[in-house]
Image 1 (tube, rainbow, N blue to C red):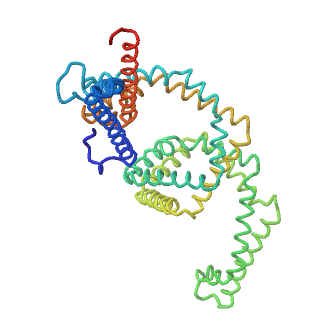
Image 2: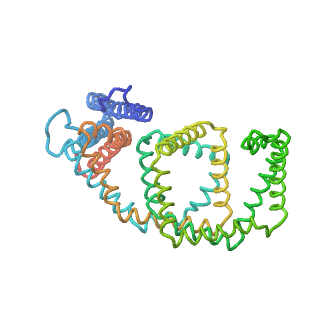
Length: 425
């Protein structure tokens, strides 16, 4: 009988223990019934000869009950505490049982053909799609993904992430030379006249600013004139400069071939060529780049950007109504719909899952099966006995009960045949 207190057992094990105790009580009750019947029949058979048949049946029932009690008990412990050979089989051979069970599972369940056959008969992709396209399930997947992502973000060290970003930036941005790639890129832009839109935008922006900020030209030039120049001339000079600036910008806006535009085109073309071929220009760009990335302010901005991004992600992941969580759930639903309706995708997913499972089984089946062996080896013999007895003990008590009935029938049959065959008995 398991010695673990009921409170420490799982609900399922508690129910198994109650069923085991009931069957033990029934089996013991059958033995006691046969013993009482035997005493009564043995006592009264001299007066009632027919009770000899009852006595024979009761005798056989007791023998069957005791024999099966011994057999069942010998599996789990020494009967009556006596160290009889080949008893207490499970605690004494626990490790061997674990190894045998592991080998059985490895040979018969973790075989490639068994796994492939089972998976081939299971529409994995379609079933997964039907499950995923249901909104509650999609939200659950999104919630679990958010939990995992939150745990990962919280586990990351901010210093380590900043160092990683710095290393990646230095490896992929700082160390490679910018001049030739930038020159090629700029040359393609100039050849395609793609920069004209930027020039138009700049001219429009300057024109808008000039129209709204005429007063900014007051004193811009006149304050540099000699003091003897009349005040009226000051105003005239400032107004003239402002109007000339406005007229120049409007001319640039209206004339696609304006000299200023052509000058910009020529400058950009020369710059593109110098970035590719002029060592001095390339050196200036590299120095500017190094100064930029070595600036403490840039490092502080990178750290601030990571902290802001991390805080924003954690907030979005924690809020079921956030756009991130909602879009994630919608994406999961869309995946489920595709898995349900796209036959080609179903075939690819089923094939991939089957091949992956077969690969894992072929490569790691011994390691998987060893979990059984190692787990059983770590169990205490008494604990192993309790676990197995809880699982199969109730059925073994049926064997005791059946042994009582079969023994009684056998005893009655033997006694009846003997009386019928042997004269004078």
